[in-house]
Image (tube, rainbow, N blue to C red; front, side, top):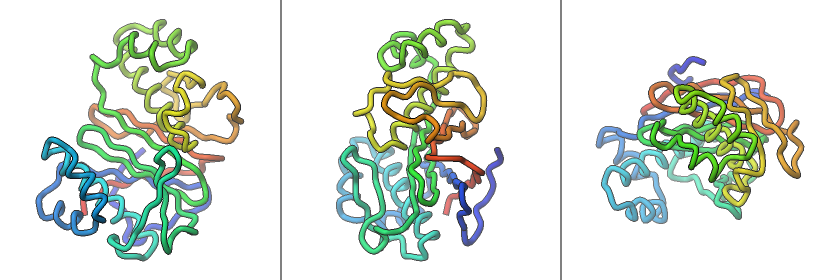
Length: 242
């Protein structure tokens, strides 16, 4: 999986997903450029963060979302409108409400990922790897019994990477379904193996054949996963700053 610069005019093919990556710590001129595209409610949300670093990261993330989507829609970033599902999943609204474009975004520490496809539900998750968080206590709180057994069977050296593979795969799935944390993380299983793609297992009240799951190699101290409805043909990975 290779990250490259994006094309001038990105175009989605059937079964294809585009994953965009941005560093959230950006220079002031880009921050202000993104800020100018946000709606009042987005600026209000940014202002709720206690630390300036987090306010900046929120503005960069939202501005980047608008900037990228506008390239697919041939629209101005500031003209985009969003709606939110019952559990908070965003979608395009207003004049673009009927578009087939689907997207999902995740951020952690200093990295944000944006996944885009056409006509398919999808979810993406990225997490900054912290060895102190990858504990059996946390696994027992959020993982299924099967996953906890697999986690405990590993050496400590293997557990940290396996923990975050499991966590990102599960988070990406509940984001793809649109149910968020209303769907308990312990109600379905994912493999902890480092295979790509990785299969979802035993999802209660769901047809597992509906979903494709792949790990995303972000680099550095990060783990990430992508879940897409149906068959995933190809993933294109692009890095961008402006």
